[in-house]
Length: 352
Image (cartoon, rainbow, N blue to C red; front, side, top):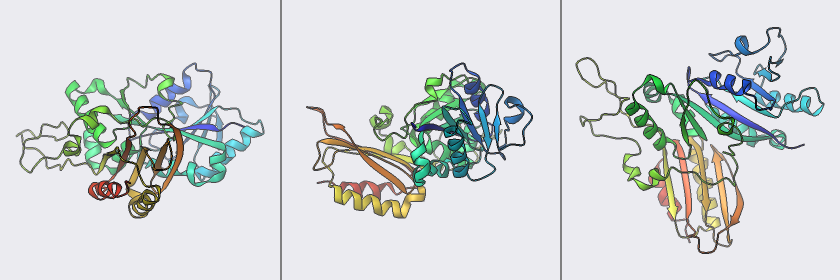
């Protein structure tokens, strides 16, 4: 049996997860989708899109989809779905997990790596994060959950852009890019998103190309990544609210979720790199949200692809370096207050 693809749908309270999910479920794409949702979520889709008569854990939806509230451990729920599919009791092509708006998607993603039985039955495709353009500045300033959701994303959908000025949308996208340069961003209107932008994104596929926003590498991004400014220095970032008197409220808008990129044309020593990554993951693993790279390793003429979530990381041999191609290693790290200098210096010392 082929692996069942899984999409994790996350985003802060009111960002539009349920609207997007309803759109996906009702579009005529011919796929049957099993939905797992947190029963204590702030937006309960049961009332609107599920058939009413239900005391069961797994619910038949009115459009042929299946919904399953997490009344038990996620791992058990996934195993139950897979078992029912194997026995022919349920028919579905893929799973969407809708997290509650206050959830950290990290532990959900880790389930697909830590549990062998789950890994043998499911393939984590991607994490989709919705960001509410109207309230994003405040949420990102005040709530670490919102920042974590951005840091984990493989794709970011920005909702409610019609409620704010274009300049605010641009500033938000700029901020999101520096928090997570590997996630493409797209403004969405009332959840109207093409299915191709939601499924089969292969965000967790080790052999997928390393997507880093080219502008992030081009500009002097390192100095501006946190949008720092000195105390008293003028800052026109929209997330800095001003009161009627024109005084800025004190927000140190230096996001704790940040990203940085390491690049080198020299090859890595496999043993040194393994030791270094093992050490930093041991120390900083809980704060390392996502990290991914395409590496030039001594001793192989093929690209080495690696990625990780928190303390879990894996690597795989990719395609051979093309003739004449510059053998450049590129690594992106997205995390919470990671000591960038320690990482960059340590990686430099792992080069041959």
